Structure formats: structure tokens, C-alpha cells
Image 1 (cartoon, helix red, strand yellow):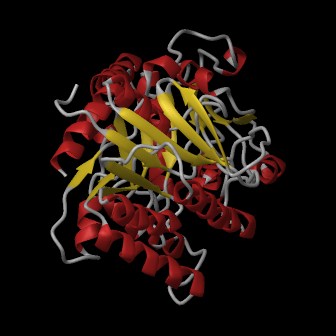
Image 2 (cartoon, helix red, strand yellow):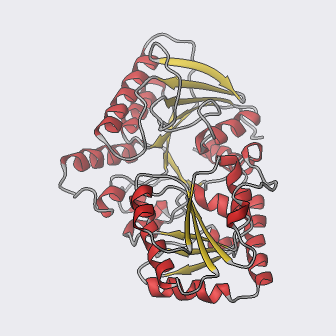
Amino acid sequence: MTSVFMNIWYISKYAITTQEGFPSRQFMLAKQMAKKGHDVSLFYSRSNGKKSDRFWGCCRRQRLEGVSCYQLNGPLVSYGLSIKRIFSWIIFEWNLFALLLLPNKLKRPDYIIVSSLSLLTFVTGIWLKRKYKTKLILEIRDIWPATIVESGRFTENNIFVKILKKVELLGYDNADAFISPLPKFDLYLRSQISKPFSFKCITQGYDEDFVTLVKTGLYEEYFSRDCFNICYSGTIGRLNYIEVILDVAERLKEYSKIKFLIIGDGPLKKQFIASNTNKNVVFLDSIPKKEVIPVLAKADLLINIWGDLKIYQYGVSPNKWIDYLLSGVPCLVAYNGYRSMLNEAGCVFFVDTNNRDLIASKILELSKMDTSFLKEMGERGKVYAEKHLNYMELAGELLKFVETV
């Protein structure tokens, strides 16, 4: 526990609590900070990509795991950029503004943590900083608008991108400190602003209360013991590069003992299923979040493909990698960005994301490797995660950093 009691407001439109399903990073950090004796309030939206019951008014308050949770009203939205999703950003800021402008019983915060996305909350955070004469900390989980420009969805000259860029820089100029799961975000920040700043990398992590490590019989029949089972688990969308996995599998189709299992759901799943003729590839339905790790543990190798984007030079920290680490299975990652987490854990084989022949040949090489060596690699990843990536420890690091701001 830190030496100073703090009242912390954590504002994140896309936070998820135990009421909507498997809780998000923001809720888990808030929960652990509250456990350490601090007063933590989490402000988030009904428009967070999860199903949520209707309610009247701009906000409903709940006490969950010691955290004061303020869910702001808004339309249900799905993941992916759309007009409805952007409209939900505006509604969230309006309701947050209304809630905090009107007389209420909320105590003045000592610190306000604003987590992107949406970038519009930067503006609200600046207003709250001035209103309460407090400290503003920005949490950058994705670098916007750079990410959507580099991925080819928009150009730098797009009016939407130009507005977001101005909001981004406004937030950076007015923040007192920064946190991010991206290990080299501070390098990006130095390229954007000239003022000195404080930065702390707080990676993605896990909460023991929401992780199942016991064995499960789910999908048991698909993991044949006389085969080399390669598994992907996650979203099946545009930026998940499942087409690369399918292409690599096609290059290895003569090896009937090398199996590819693709677990998850997403907008491109039906398209990939319809086009796939490779008997060595199996698409499976999404797994309940608590079942993911024990199912992944049945695999011989876990795979993850990334695009070749310049923005990845600042690192990535996906939730998927936490599940991969805790499964105790080695990983093959096609990625050209800054290597962290998996590399530090010593449980990964990195390959050039642009070389599909190299990916295929590496898989073939690993399929012939001593299984005891692969198991040892996977176990190193699990030990690393349990030691360094528990949200209880990460929340402690965050609190120590906050005290210095």
C-alpha cells in the first residue's frame, strides 16, 4: 500500500465491469487500487461494445469490487469504426459533462486518469483538471489517429483525422503525466511535444480472480496428440491477418500432421470459412473468456500475425499475449515492431511478418523439434506472466508512479 490516501477518478469509455462480462484492464486496475485502500471511481459507457441493460437518465451508479462505477448511458455499439460508434463518443462526453457539472456528492479527485479511446475524453479531462485544480494523467492504449492512418483506413488529410490530431496534441500539452501499455510510447511522445514529461509503462496483465487455469474438456477432440497443433484465438477481422495463417497453412497442406485451429469470431469469419478448402484448417467458435487459457494449453504452438506498420516501433501489448503466456505454450509471432513481453519471457519465435515462406518453414522446423524443449519454453512464459503481469503488482506500480506526479 502506498503511503498517501488518494481519491482517483478513472475515465474510460470502453471499460468493462463484471456486470457486462469479463472485466477490462481499467476495471482490474481500479479494483486493485481500491483493495490497497484508495477511493477509486470508474466512469465508463454503456456503449462499450458489450450488452448492457437499458436504464433511464444519463448515469447509473454501482459499487463493484470496492470500486464506485458510474455507467453513462448511450446506444449499444459493436466493435469497429462506424458513424454510430463516433456518435457514441459524443454522447459519452455529453453525459459525463452533465453528470459532473450538476451538483453531486462526488469528492474532489486528487488524480484523474483518462484512458483513450475516445480521444474526445482528453478535452473533458482538461476541463476537469481545471475545474478541480487536480492532476491529469493520460493513458494511451492505442496511438490515434496514427494507427488508423497507417492501417490505410484514412489519410492524413481526412477532416476526421485532422480533428483527432488536434485533440491528441491538446491532450498531450495539458497532461501532467502519461501511462501506456506500449513500452516505447515515450519515444512517440517526444516526437509530438517539446515539454518534459513523466511516463510509466503499465503493461496488460491478469487478475487471478478472473483467470481459470484448471483443465477443461472444451474442444478436446480437435487437439490430436499425434499432430502438431497450431492455434490462434481472438478476433477474426481486418487487422488480425487470418488470411496470412490460411496462406501459410496452404503452403504446408502436404503435411497432414500439422493442424491449424482458428478459434474466435469476427466480421470476416464467414468469408474465410467459405473460401477455405484446406482440411488441415479448422475454424471453431469463440470460447468463454474463462475457458481460453486451458484450451490454449492443449496446443503445441500459438500463432499471432501482425501487419508491418511503422507505429509498432513503439511496441504493442495485446490482451491476447497475456492468455498466450499463461497457457504455458510457446508462440510464433510474425511481427516487425519493438519486441517486448514475449521476448522478455523467452517463450517466442519472432519472424518477419512480410515473409510467408519463412513463417511456413519455421512452423515446419518447430513441428520436428523436441517437444520437451517447446514445453520448457512455454513454461518460461507462464512463470514470467505470473511473476510480472499480475494486476495486483501492476496496480502497485501505477500507484507509486501516481504519487510522483
